Length: 143
Image (cartoon, rainbow, N blue to C red; front, side, top):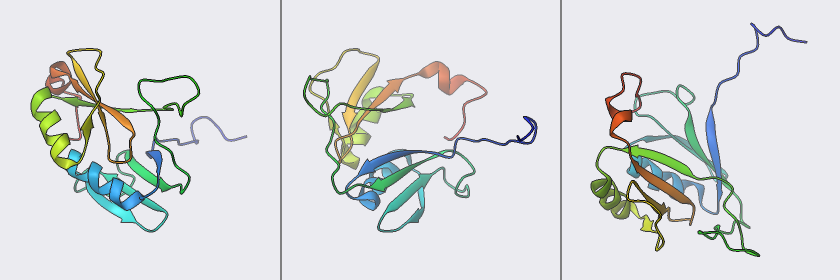
C-alpha cells in the first residue's frame, strides 16, 4: 500500500457527455474566455488561458452518441441531471447576455434572483451565480 505522503491526487477535470465534444468545448471556451488545449473526435478539453493542460482543473467533453439532455426542472420518468456547473460572476445580467451570445439559453423556470439557470448548446444546465464576495477574495483565481 502506498504511503499517504506519496500518493498524489489532483482534480484534473470535470467530464461531460455530449454528442459533439469539440462544438461544446468551443461554447465553454467562448463563455469562460478559456482555451482548447486538446481535441479529437472523442474528447475535447478547455482550460484556463496560458496554462498547460492539467495545470488547473478543466472541463472535458466526452463523445456519447446516445447522449440525451437532462430535463430541468426534474420530472419523474425523464432523463435526470446528474451534475451541473456553477460559475461565479460579478455582474449577473451582463454574464447572462454574454452566455446567450455564446449560444446558451435561459431556463424558463428560475428559483432565485441571485443566480440564473442556463442551458449550454447540448442541453446541460449550468448556473451563473452573482458572487461578489468570491471575486473580492484573495484566494479567487482563474480570472
